[in-house]
Image 1 (cartoon, rainbow, N blue to C red):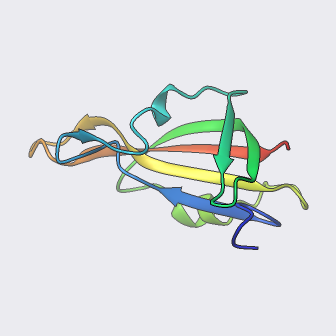
Image 2 (image 1 turned 180 degrees about the horizontal axis):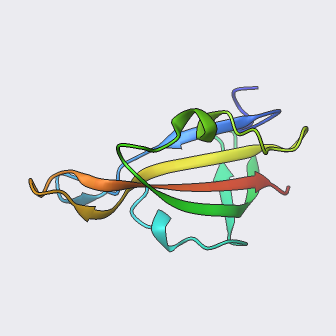
Length: 109
């Protein structure tokens, strides 16, 4: 099942927006909107298609990680991916974001 993201559950991915001032994998995660489609291409060329069903911003100190990783509202049989990255404003140090952006998508093909 490791080659099928979210198969029979929820696969969680976390990545940076920037790393040492260089754009990182989730640099454009904030630009996704509900209904947007995401393709995940596996090493073997297989492509899985997902559609964004929710996008939320949480305070970094109170983000409900348990509910995000194990969503109680995921219908049985739906395959989800959840992507988490930093978002919002930087704290007073200028190095750490105050929020976390979370995008959830369900597999459509």
